[in-house]
Amino acid sequence: MHYTIYSTVYNNSRTLEESLKSIFRPEYDIIVVDSCSNDGTHEKLMDLRQELNLKIIRKRCSRGEGRNLALKEATNASRTAYVDLDAIYNENFHILLTSEVNRLFVSTGQWSYFGKKEECLERGGWRDLNEGENDEFILRVGVEKVAPVIIGINQRFKHSDREKRYAKGIELWKREFSLKVDEIRGYGLGFDELPRSSLLHYLVARAKGIYAYQSGVNNPDLLMELMYKKMIDPAELGIADKWIALESYEPQSRRMRSGDDFVREMWGQAFKYIVTKNPVRVRRLNRMGVLYVKSKEGAENWLFAEEEYEPELSLVEGFNVRASS
Image (tube, rainbow, N blue to C red):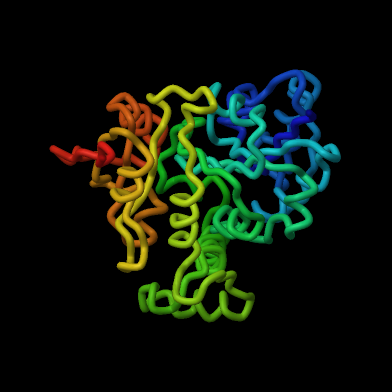
């Protein structure tokens, strides 16, 4: 089996080398699309090219467009996975990459998708989006299994400063406006799910095209339902319980299953936490975040992996998910 890891990067020189070294193995190909960085990122990539077996493409593009370009450059018939180069990956990433589970979606913290190059491209590849591109891609390309596994940690930024490394002044405003438009498009959001201040964003998104795959259900909710249906126990792949964590949120409508119901069926026992200070994804959807773990060490590992977003957890005392007989 041939393995290709691909990513996009822009103005990420501070975290780039450590991230790349965490995913490197001599038998892997690594393809990086640099969106014309101007902070030394490109020069650092060139310095690391031979040591880490990198293929580097330089083109100004969105995250989704860059991933699609990289995917097309992957070796034919290879098993592929996308990564973010502001994260440090652990051994679980390599276990899942080299597993035999096709169309495998990792749904915790650092998301990834493990699948064959040709299957991903035949289903349309990645859209030209800078936000919501993961949900849209995964729903359209399809999932066979979902693994709620911590595969890496976000490197430390103050989240409010994250976008400032990409642009400043009017360019920062333009970037943030574009991100909100892409969020609506990629998440498949309806106007009734948005604040009134987002009217202009919504109109631009409508003109460009909103990728909604089920009437009345946004893509994150649809993806959450898919996760429940396709979830596997990562222990079957050799993942220790301390790395298993299921991120969820309270359902928007009664037609959606709650995480409590799913975990009762799937796991013999677990701990439930309310995310009292929510990561960005849940906060954008205006939901109460929930975390299920098999061990309390799993909650500690999740907090460490998500420390950039400064989440806080509150244990639900007396929660018991032992399957009923």
